[in-house]
Image (cartoon, rainbow, N blue to C red; front, side, top):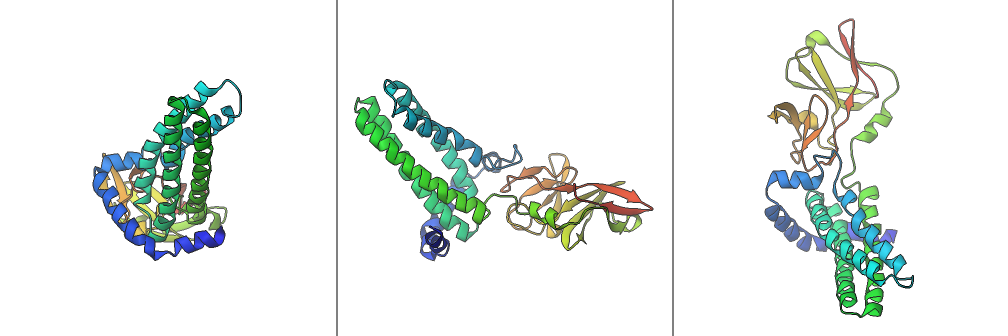
Length: 283
C-alpha cells in the first residue's frame, strides 16, 4: 500500500482530472464566507474530519445491526442517515481539497473516488432495503463499508503523511528551547509593522500596536507560507496578517483564523518586557 500511495502522489496523469475538478469546485463554491465555513474557520480547526463521523458511525452501526436478528428497520434508518450526511461532508472535503498542492490533490482525488464508490453502494443498499430486498441491501452495505474504509485509509495518508489541512507550523514549537528568549529592544520596534525575528532558528513575526506586541509563529499553518512577507489588513475590526501564498488571515491580537483556506488558528507566543527588551517563550 505504501508503494501504491507513493505512485499515486507522483501520478501526474491525474492532474488532468484534478485541475479541471479544482476549477469546478472553486467556481461553484465562490463566496468566500461559504468556503471559510466549509474550511472550519469559525471552529478554529478543519470541519471535514468532524463531519465524516456521522456517515462513518452510521454505516458501522448499520453493519453491526445487519448481523443481528430483528434490526432491519434500525439498520435501514442508519444507512439512510449515513448516506444523506455523507453529502455535506463530501462538499467540505472538496473545498479543502481544492486548496491543496498537486501531489496532495492526486491522493485526495483517489480518496474521493473511493468514497464516491462507497456512497453509491450505500445509496443502492438503501434503495434495496426500502423495496424489501434486505439481503441485497446488506451485501451492498458491506461492500460500501469496504470502499469507505479504503477511502478512510487513503484519507489518513493524505492527512498524516502528506499533512493536508494539518497545522504545518505547530511543530516549530518543538524546536524552541525552554525559558525566555530576547527578541528586540522595545524602542526599536516600529508601530503597526511586521518584523521577522528568530528564536533558536524558528522564525517568528512581531507586530507592535501601542504598548502591546504580538509574537506569532511565522510559518502559515496551511502550507507553511511566510507570514512575515504578508500584508496587515483590518478584517472584522481587527488587525490581521494575510498569508501571501493562499490568502489565509489570522488576527494579530489572538492568532484566530478569520479567513481560509487554513482551518487552524495560528500560534501566539507569550511575551514580557525586561529592562526595555521584548522577550518570548514557548507557551
